[in-house]
Length: 212
Image (tube, rainbow, N blue to C red):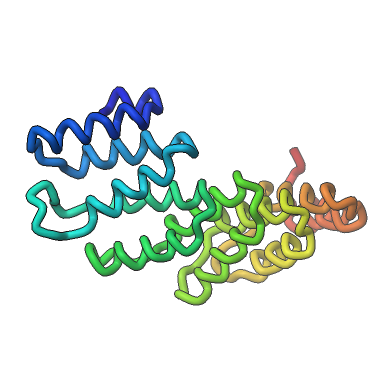
């Protein structure tokens, strides 16, 4: 299973699990986690990985079941983030809270927002930012930077600028050079050169951040 995970061979990984069940070899958290990570790297394996997650975390009379750890939920969340499965990710967060008393935290949402940024999906990134506010989870500067970048890649400059001002108004975190790079890039992608120049000047003369 480790070799399959390293080589991103999710089909071989699922085949190995099938053989283990056939010979009544109990599954444990490490084996399932390796299988999920193998599925995570290939979009054709995402749904198969989630099916493994659901079957493994469903407590029943199956002797192969054992309590699942946080890492398994985190990997399943990463698959949902890569696939853009917003509702499934919400249900997994709730399921983890119910089963292992693991409430959602900033790391979970930052991971999901980062996945949205990689998928150039600003709408979903903003949905996760709103979800954090609803649950009173404080976003980190990483969360903001990824959301701003996602909006820029989705040609949503107004939302990117709005998120920047939210970050700037925060009492516990401040914009970094990455924040300014993200919002300037968002403006550049939508031909808002005046806004880009404004942020560039603020970065240098108000925040004393040297441009790279």
